[in-house]
Length: 95
Image: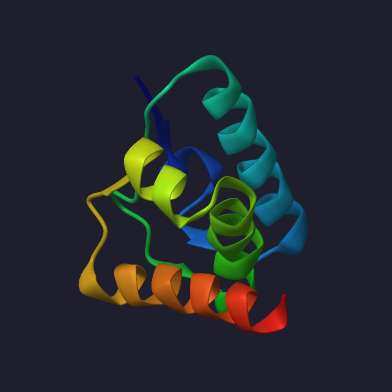
């Protein structure tokens, strides 16, 4: 098991280059570990397009079943959980 702490990338995630870096780090961790926790502790905000870039792309790449089996979201506020959900929904709509 591995934990990725989003606060190590900054407290506001709103840049496409940063979103791509986070996605790449998540994919790399999933190649090495069967289970991954993504920790939102201290994250103030995340742009919806970054959520789509990170979580939407991840959801499409893994499939819903594997996503929910291998990825856990921790310490996310209700607002951050909504942003993650919106990112996944937008990716599904755009595919």
